[in-house]
Length: 525
Ligand code: C2O
Ligand code: CU
Ligand code: CU
Image (cartoon, rainbow, N blue to C red):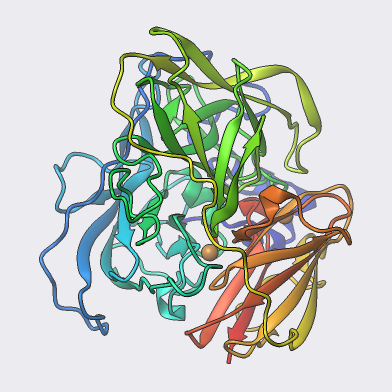
């Protein structure tokens, strides 16, 4: 029923044409050509920013999995449903996640926001209730990857470890305590579908959500004097940036033949088109996630106010830094603080993207005009006990031993698709076998052609040691799990795989590149 890009590749249909294929496979379900019809114009700032709810705890259930002590349980179902992207747009058929113990109704996209505490593991049962006879883009199989998480191979959403409609799978998400390892102070993870060949299509349909992690140092309570006192709930908010195309009937437009990276012309935050958010005159912590398939962003505030960056994917920076803009590649996250206290009541601040991008190749450079993404409206006062600490964590300690192994991976274009070291993804081909706890250096190299590749390595966090022979910029100097490779880039990263032996993947997070085979397996031994 579903058509993957690699099916197309295997069938040799790339050149001979999509005419041999069923009509639905060629473009979107409503058969508007993506090139000929832009999305309908929708007034900005009329939808309020949705904040995906935290799932309720489930009663402990019987599971075949070994459950770590003290685990909390959740139960989520993946379903098809109708979603309101904008008040003026008809309802859209999407796939999303729904908390089985929640208020009910329909699945949401982004899905429920998991919140965990370091040291408290979670067991999550995901039920696949997607339509088995689905027609259109996407495949109704599920594999859940908690991106940024340190989890066993079977809990990692390995792309072929998928479960089908009517089946369920229990994921054990461990939460190791890292207080003696300042490299690992993770705070903003996310989860998304990772089904082999269909990650791009399924994520585009809605299968993604936030996962926030707190720790003793970052307890999520600005009033707790033992912690860092960063702005906390309800002033700690995830913002997922995505782009989509819509037909006039509200349906999602997608092109399964775009192997370069599908771009939308309409911008969502947390599943709403150009939303607004009412903010108090105080500090907020925003977890910015680029959840787009292939779109890069450079976000500015219309008032010129800079962002105070406190962290990236792998946790907190050593010190906060001020940045006039936030540049984001697919899969990247930025943990920032914005202070609205100096604005008058009623002030409006627009977040806009000033990066031009015309194709999946990557950004073209600064745009002549900013594209509005969302708007903050200053509305009232609220107490603020949060602080922006001078230091967020101790500096990284040098490794006691030199790295044991150096591996080189080149991300390029070949064989009619996208390759790592000349190879298309093959679940049985192992490109590396790092030993647990060894410190290794991986050289990630852009294979050329002017393409951008945002690279993600599972299981470990990456520390950028050098980019093109130079030390990383301050914003790149914390722990990350994304390493963007711009044209000509060669980046050395320190990796150290720990705790779990098994098979994992690393891949380009331009998810059309990933599905068109820019992914490789490594086994920790
Ligand atoms: Cu966010 Cu392997 O992916
Ligand atoms: Cu990951
Ligand atoms: Cu790529």
